Length: 394
Image 1 (cartoon, rainbow, N blue to C red):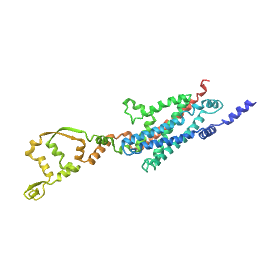
Image 2: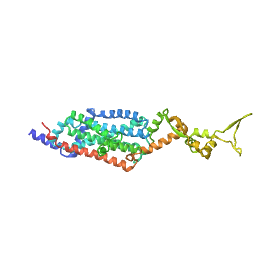
Image 3: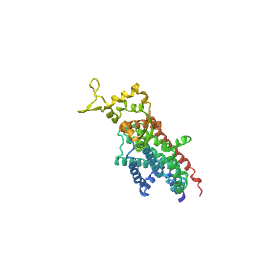
Image 4: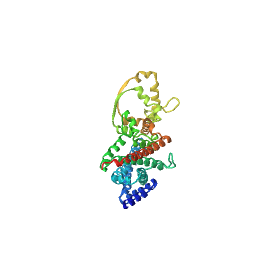
């Protein structure tokens, strides 16, 4: 009689799937409070603080800084998501098996996990953005797809974190022990990071593989939101600055030297302009006096340079070669540092543009949908894998 009563109680307890979701979800939130699952939030704040300290100088200011910062943010999302759920099924597998035999639907159990983990991921995303604000990581106010940029970024970070969370949930459903789950997880993270397709140079055959990684879509989405292709590339100019004292040796003709000191160059170089504007003088008994042409206009060095560059009688002299040694810094000074820097930044930025990071609303929404699709796919796979829990060896 007592056994029949217990069975009837169990059937009443697990009468409907929705009711089961509510019961299991309540258990998860009690575990959040009483089994210290809340520790994921202060850990997320600590990681966000370290991340903000690293990316604050260059993120959304240069191409290189934006790419590295986007990769770091995607990594944090992957890390948070994986650690949220990598052990949640393993550690209570025996309980789940017993409850399943008593009438618990695996679909209800997984849906409860999906809701609970979504709350954790949302909390971690809010903490990340709040820490960024506290540490003065500057973002544009206006968003690209929503009214606020932080909301755009928050959606991306949440989807990366949640998809990684569901991937870890799948691993936890397939691997039967917590030790096994923690052993598998580093390989999953390394695979995600190496095959992100943005930071590491990979052979062409790996391109289909990168399409299977969450990091690839997260990185592309964040770079697109940060308007990667409109930013300057600073590495080329930094390299040139470090090479200022490097000597360059070669041969130049007198004609090439005259061309370098022409009027076109003077508009870009203060040194050449000052040289060309220098008035010519001659010594007289009473002192120095300015040279002037027939109209009384002072003769400048620029007039002499222009004459020497075109005079037919100097054609042979212009063809003479002279060996020269000059440093990169001296060349920069001739043309003007600001002008050289501007030209280098513009040319290198144009060469560094990547269509994968184009600020296109369709690209961003596609990445969002793919990340959400991965999350649903992983959750469904975890549900199917856990349906065979009764086949575990006793």
